[in-house]
Amino acid sequence: MNSQITAIGVYAPDQVITNDWFADKIETNNEWIISRTGIKQRRFAAADEYTSDMCIKAAKKLQAENPGTSFDDVDFIIVGTTSADQVMPNMASQIQNALNIQNTGCLDIMAACAGFVYGIILAKGLIAAGTHKKVLVFGAETLSKFTDFTDRTSCILFGDGAGVALVEAAEKSKIFSTINGTDGSHGKDLYLSQHASVVNGEEIVPNGKIHQNGKVVFKWAIQTITNKVGELLSKNAITLDDLDWIILHSANLRIIEAVAQELNVSMDKMLTSIELYGNTSSASIPLAWDLAAKSGKIKPGNKMLLLGFGGGLTYAGVIIEV
Ligand code: UT7
Image (spheres, helix red, strand yellow):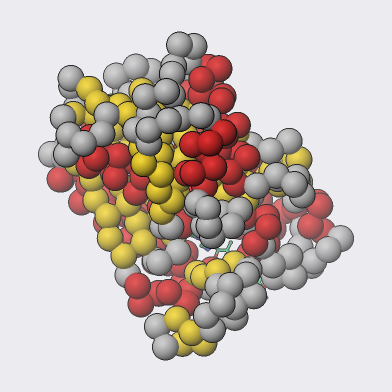
């Protein structure tokens, strides 16, 4: 069976955190943050607001903006997150309960900033197998609860937010060929450990905070993502000109600019969420999609390339039609 994304919804917490907010806490300034990352502000969840809360709000927003959408017959819920409220129960089960969905599979997946696209790939597979028909795929993070605010190289990057896509069985295929992969040897370059003090035989700090070797991840991202966009296009037998929009994970505006330059694509084609929301990991792609949709950029029939990448180091990409 073919599949398509029929609707999306997003939610970002109310609390806006400007770059100046960091200036009296660590040695940094607005100019450095904007010029090195593109980030102007980000949102932080309230103290009592968690990833599952934001997922539920994003799903309700999807329904409010797409009247008549019912979740009653949703038969699978997938949540891509690395900042779950707790390890067990999973986020998907809490969403099932809050939305009162009666007969559904519930699965959280951990693929860091690639989580949303991995979720779309899994939903496509479930529908193609003929076992499921209507899947909710979330990408949601409360990274502020796992941020080391003494580390100026990482704390200025992260923000909180949630997005959800409704993936449904369809007559015509609108989720095309996909790619995914990982270089696990880079485990130590981007990690969040609660318990283990070793990854790949190398020592790490198990303090429940995000640790990143920014320079290494930056270089890996530009090289890998440029190559993988090319691979995804050839797998789908289309060219860059056939695409209306490209949404790469909003990790750093300089990464997106460098990939655009390598591909010889105008930045006008690249949709981002980094400026207003910071790096929201698995939520960054739906947030960018929603911003562009609300501004009237995305039109029915448009083709978009979505590519997430991050901790693992892993990546996942897909080309869709909206
Ligand atoms: O989402 C998952 C994937 N993640 C990524 O793709 C992130 C990839 N990495 C990055 O985005 C960038 O590497 C960072 C934004 C994390 C860092 O930017 P950078 O241009 O690589 O900076 P840098 O680490 O090379 O640091 C340049 C300078 C250093 O000073 P010196 O050694 O040249 O004197 C840093 O100490 O900037 C300094 N610096 C800062 N200065 C002001 C580092 N952080 C800050 C700061 N404010 N917040």
